[in-house]
Length: 102
Image (cartoon, rainbow, N blue to C red; front, side):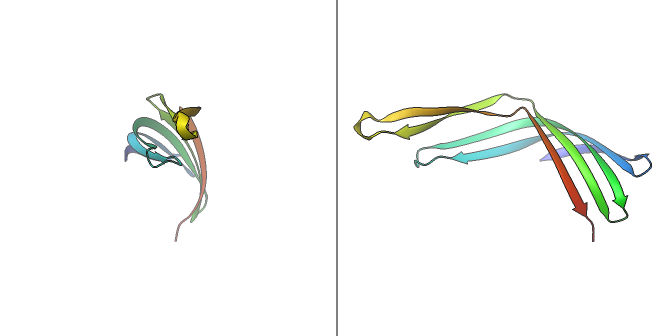
């Protein structure tokens, strides 16, 4: 979920966006006991370039406002659970999209 401010035609054929939002991540491991659920607040900035009337190239950047990490665990027979790897959700996520409007 996000709420964005949009400014159309900041330059010829360009639109800009800025906003805040929340994303929810559900990550499941091999074992049924492994379920990680995160709600992460983020800020985003974006720029759309209208190549043609119905063709747009969009570049966005998302910055997670909360550092999030979790441990992937495995089971090794009678010894029980072991930690396999510590994973960090990236703070900055770039995105580029080619959009075709109908």
